[in-house]
Structure formats: C-alpha cells, structure tokens
Image (tube, rainbow, N blue to C red; front, side, top):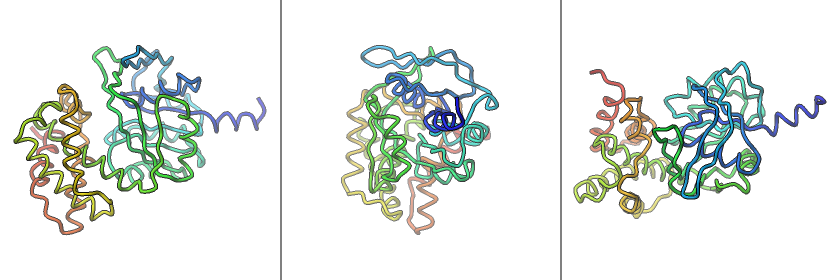
Length: 302
C-alpha cells in the first residue's frame, strides 16, 4: 500500500469506542452495509449481537482492549457514558489525529466541553440519540425501536452522514441543534425519577408521578429557555405522553446503572439544570431535591 493509499484508508476508517447498547447499535448498522468498524472497549469479546423484531445482527470482533494495537481513523463514534470519558482517553489519543471527527453518542448538552480536552485539534460533534437500546443478560443488545441520530448542521457532520448513509440508523441535521439537545435533556432529566423509584416507564401512568414530573419538566423548561432553547409550553406534556405511551417495562440507562450499582450520569442529566439555573437566578425547588438524591445514590457515602 502506498503512503497515499494508507492515508486514504485511515481517513475512511471508523472506530466505535464503547460497544455497549448504543455503540453496538451503531456498529451493527455499519456492519450490515459492509462498513464494519473497529471495536474498542474494556472487555475482550469475539463479537457483538444486536437483536430486534426481525432477528439478530452479528458484528464480528474482536473488541480490542489495548490502545497500543490500533491505528488512527477518520471517524470515531464515542459511545461511552460521560462518567467514562476520562477512562477512554487512551483510546482517543491512539485513534485520533487532528483531522479525526469524534461523534459523541452521549447524553447531555455539554458533550463538546467534556470531550474536547482529550482530542485537541479534532472536530467534536455532539449528537442526540433517539433510540432505546438495552443490554441483555447474555450480553446482546435489544433495539426496541428504529435507530435515529440528530446532529448539528456543521461541516463535520458530513462524515457521519456518509458513514451511516443507507443504514438502519438514520441521521438528521438540525440548524437549531441547541433546542433539540435541550429537549432531549428534559426527557433524560425526568427519566432520573426512574432511578430514584427503581421503576420503569409504567410509573408515569400514576397520576401523582405524572403531576410531579410535569412540575419538574416545567422547572427544567425555564432553564432551557434561559440557555437559548426555543421550546414551547407543550413540551413537558409531550414528554410525559411519550413515557406513558412506552411499554410499561421500558427502562432507561440511568436506571440500568442504578440497578447495577454503577456511577450515575446524574450531573450531566440533572445537575446541569440546577447549575445553569443558578447562573440565571432561576429557583429550582424540585431539582434541589432530585439532584442530591441522585448524587448520593451514585457516589455515596454509605
């Protein structure tokens, strides 16, 4: 292979760091159309398995565990949680050059600020992930609806569009990405109540939980608007309606982490509401209860 061909191969190569539920879904989408990515994670595995209503997609491994054994790529899908970015730093250093696009498949509205320090010179592309994917006891991933991403309408998004074109994972570009990201954050914030109760989506059909959730969402909405998000008064009720329409047993990643006694993404999903509210002088009485409870459930002591 010539030096030019080697450079072209690196530019077109794709890696998925963090082959959990979201990472497996994206890896399977790429594999199905002949664009199998490099898989990078903490645990060695021979393959990944994605399941949906139509059957299984098996993504061949291995899942690499040593950053010293990988080469630079043109596109990295970073699918670790916000609590795991520091631990993934060695992967980012090994995979990225100044032209590598890092597409962050994470919750929250602070993705660029969290990841950029680890990839100097690289475009960091935030995303909104709209699909529920759940890891099963056997290690496979169950995709419960169609896969969809929203990205900001910026030049770096073109590489992700090209990579996922024609796959099961659709990609939308948003001119007002801030508003889309904050809307998803509101959804994630109220889902934090599931971690506190140990219950799944069915709990939102209780009148008392629905009332509490609406009040919390309206509090969050005021903060989102102060941050520049253009969201209407109808958004809180729409979010509650969507939870009530879900299968009663549908969970969320923060609940799964609580059940497994893993650190929770409480700060980027819920803490940010209280943090940004203080900047704008907005009272957040519900956040002032929810956030310490989630933080304690995640970090202890006790």
